[in-house]
Length: 144
Image (cartoon, rainbow, N blue to C red; front, side, top):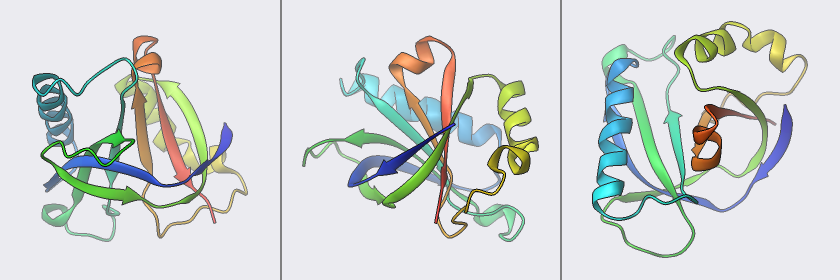
């Protein structure tokens, strides 16, 4: 785990509303196809997945999930744009497998230890081409 500061991160994104799970993966695939078709996906691309709601406190039909491409300029790529909350994040690199992701969430309390998690901000899943090619992804936990 490393600590990283997020500043001025903008994404072009797609959102779905509904129960988390397989539909989030389908949205990610749709999003990547859009980026490929629009010649926006490159070796330098970073894609974020953001579960905006706590499934323990929000009805499953109202859960929101965004997938977005980090953009560096003012380019208009035909999608909604939004900012990622600035601040410090604990970055956990894990294997990009269903088993590893499930294990990460199951062990999150022990992984976080006494870190001051900011529950007012969403957890950010980060996928960049270099890590994905090595079968890794990152979970970014917001800190106070």
